[in-house]
Amino acid sequence: MLKTPIARGVALATLGATLAIPTMAQAAFFEDTKANLELRNFYFNRDFRQDGAAQSKQEEWAQGFLLRVESGYTEGTVGFGVDAIGLLGVKLDSGGGRYGNGSQLLPGDGDSAADDFSELGLTAKAKFSETVLKVGTMQFKNPAVANSDSRLLPALMQGANLVSKEIDGLTLDIGYANRNNQRASSDNEVMSLNGVTANNNNTRGIQMSAGAANQSDDFRFAGATYKFMDNLSGSYYYSKLEDLYKQSTFNLIHVLPIGEGQSLKTDLRYSRSKDDGSTNIDNKAFGAMVTYSLSGHSFGLGYQKMSGDTGFAYLGGNVDPYLVNFVQINDFANKDEKSWQARYDYNFAAMGIPGLTFMTRYITGDNFDRVTGADAGTEGKEWERNTDIAYTFQEGALKNLNVKWRNATSRNNYGNDLDENRLIVSYTIPLM
Image (cartoon, rainbow, N blue to C red; front, side, top):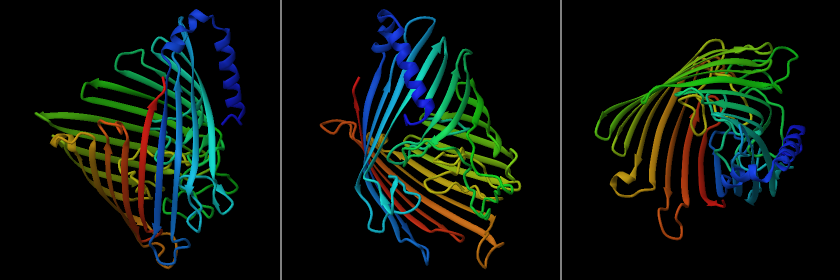
């Protein structure tokens, strides 16, 4: 990541500032520093099940190393610090017709996966009272933008973020980004809009204006989250990808205690997306998820509806959309699509097996138009089924080792039919 001017500038400025501060003022800087190394072993297998598929499957196995360092702050009215993230991905197995476009774990090296890739990101930070400013390598996670961390290495961005908690219960969040670093890449690239195809022919209905390019080097957002009471919070975020779209997002979360070990959680989401000069984006996205919890059991029902001239708009480059029906493979956000979700979770700690968890869900969507082939214009339909089983060892030599198996089946009548398995083994070693 140090290839970009912003990263080099942050590194030099941070180093210079740190060296210029008297040694006594740096005491908290070092004492509060935290560092850990995560070892992430990832096996990914995706089978293409539709007739005439150009490739039968994608299969990769890789080892990831994630070093995270967070310094404390120097003493004084304004404290300064620096964070760092070092990432390394190493291929263990791939190739032989199993690698293809849209690699899941590793970047490409011709017609096969690269043997390894690495990156280093630095972030300068300053703190005044309960306000923190960070500049450099960012990993955002909010309703406006959430960089994915669901593969070997996380997706990152270059930019800045100001978070303020000066008022009790209120969090203000302002950010900016000009480059995107995808999870299977070492390059910082200009940003783009998800869901756009070269011929403007897609189930999302999103089109570029004549002569316009699907790229931007200016993404910004501003939001506020307020905790009205212990069990009720709400948020509003405004975001804009220059020339491509602008979006307002509302969220309300309420948890109702019912009785001993019981609760009812309601998660309501609404987004309004419009074009910003070079697209036809016009979307209203409503989502609701209601979850009833009893001891270790959780039962959830979700509903999501798209309306307007297009489907949902969000950043491309491995960014997770803020939708209740965004799941392992699909987001169910096509033009006019309506989708439903049924979900069940169980935490085996309730029956004396702490560390073992289970989740399964089923999502089905319809009411959108198919856009290709002889069936163009007819109703599109899709469904997806997910199952997660995870266990974290609680004691012994393997304490804190986490093993997770993720399985997904996706079917539709307009594109790829997929069967997918992911096996992730991770272990985090505290260094400081």
